[in-house]
Length: 228
Image 1: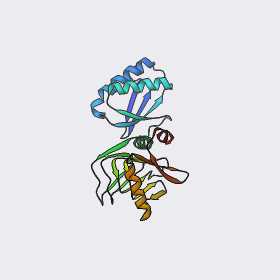
Image 2: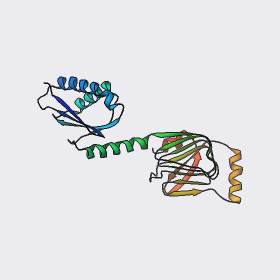
Image 3: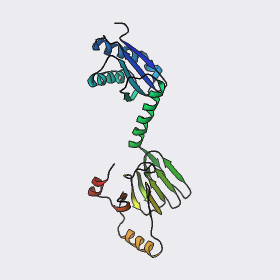
Image 4: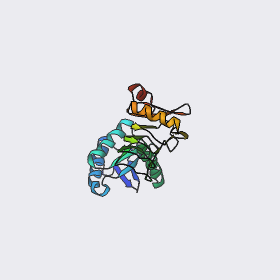
């Protein structure tokens, strides 16, 4: 069958039509050939995909996705379960999936943040350096500082109450997680805090629980209790 597989591409994805009476082995071969031929054109784009026409089992879909991966550099980030061929459907599904991927991934920033500097990110972030007084870090995910945290941090900026802040030296002016804020003690309280800090310089983690922000030394028990 010469046209067992017909591929229609949009800006955001593919609609793969499979003839109802096509043998699956033929579908596999034609899919491989068509994506090989189009490999240079599509490059390594991140796309959504939908399968129309012949009903495919979950296993058959998985096998076709493997063939596409082997035959091209296209990254299929989501499969639209409902038969659909509109560009808007592909766009919406792709954006939702990419957003989900972004929230589970993180970024790195290397360098010290000085007073007045502001760092904002849509994902979790690991800072290899210090966050000095007067600097601010805002993230929709978690914030990890491999250095001194002396400024302001806002984790879970999108409303994620399970976000946390971790630093090798934890002495921030203000920590905010979702809609909960904790500030450093002032005057006498600050002096006691400094004395306690000098006794034990150890990594600490700040997390929200029952409407409050707690700061505790990093331990396996605490990490196991953190909800990601």
